[in-house]
Image 1 (cartoon, rainbow, N blue to C red):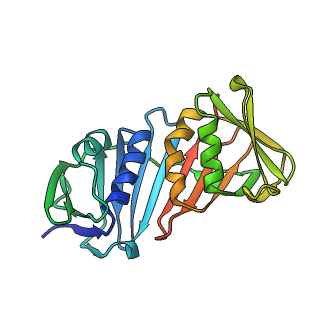
Image 2: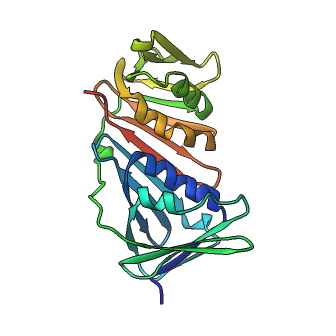
Length: 246
């Protein structure tokens, strides 16, 4: 008997999560509990943390004998799995504490077996962070801003008033304004004027996933990490935490 067996109806979306997490880190952890599955990874430089929380209600089958933790070799995993078709579903079976299987299925079943690896702890005390700026932003607006500033060494976030948020790339002599007037900024709470710079490459790695949501919550402060949180239509929650540039 397997330790757990879960079936996600959209293999394309599930594998996309693995690819995004794999862009950030070579290794990750998959925790499967009674009411949710969590994919999370901390990059080797310990600069960014991504966490994808998928509620059990998203799966069409969800059988968990006991909570399990799987160490994912993401660099190997994403190379081994072919690009799923739109109609594919994916079945994840944890055979033992050492092995797990992925099955992509439409008219044909394709089975892949992997060994669980030991991964470093990915805990970050996010709850202790006293963010000075909190914003609700159109996801597409932030994604486009990051893409437009791609290639810069760092993107500086500047918030002084409650009407707009500036994203600056000084080395490109460029800046983008997200404002309430344009509709790209929904809400902005500035407890303290703040500016902080974050690595543009790390922001670019998560930008494509933003297109899967309508709105996101962004929080930061001077010399504090940047927090991005958003939900997908199926209530999957994505959390991304990025340390400021030194």
